[in-house]
Image (cartoon, rainbow, N blue to C red; front, side, top):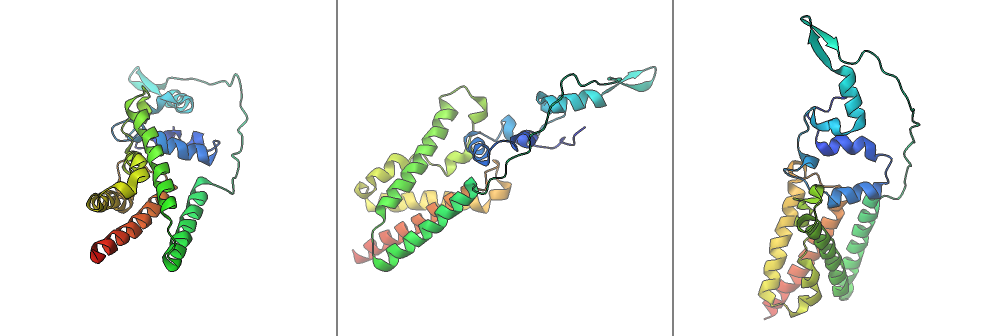
Amino acid sequence: MKKVLLALFFSCISPFLIAQTISEATTISLLAGSPGLPKDAIASPSDYMFLPDYLSDGFESATFVQGGSAVPLIVSTKTILGRKDIAPEVHFITPGKLMWVLFMLSIVLSYLSFKRKISIKWFDVAYFSLIGIVGWVVFLLWFFTDHIATKDNLNILWAVPFHFPVFMFWSKIPDKLRRWYIWIFGVIDLLILALWYIFPQNYHFAFIPLILIMLMLFAFMLKAENNKLIQG
């Protein structure tokens, strides 16, 4: 029997996601919830029987006591309808690579903005608004649907719904509130990265560059806010 006694539920289904595109797997990781729910809970032998392959393995290795000795539950097996395994496609372009390219482009854009004194507020608004929209999708799936797998989704800690529409009206928000906003969510993003490997939810690695972009933009915005404070 496959050794998944201490595997997470999400790990149980991982082998069956190989044939899916990497973008689909990333989307599942984004929209699926975690702590206290099946996806990230420890699966017992009976728990992972919801998958046909594990159910078959379980029956084949099961025994019962007869006459004081263990007797196999299944004497023999017969394949009625065989299957042909499909080799997973190899994709050169993956969500992770695209996110790192976006991160590098944001660094270049921020550097040029800093050196040439060009405003990139449009990028801040567009990026954080997009992250906020993703956060609202996570929020709606969590609280306003009956999908159990999308509950308790900690992706909402970095994909913060408040970013949209807050950044649409960023220039109209008082300076003090802007600084508090940057510090609060900047610290949360830092903690997510610092506690990545012990965090209750298994975040997809493609989300790391997205969080780094937010931290970089937060740093530039905080610097701009401090300069305004110094200049009076």
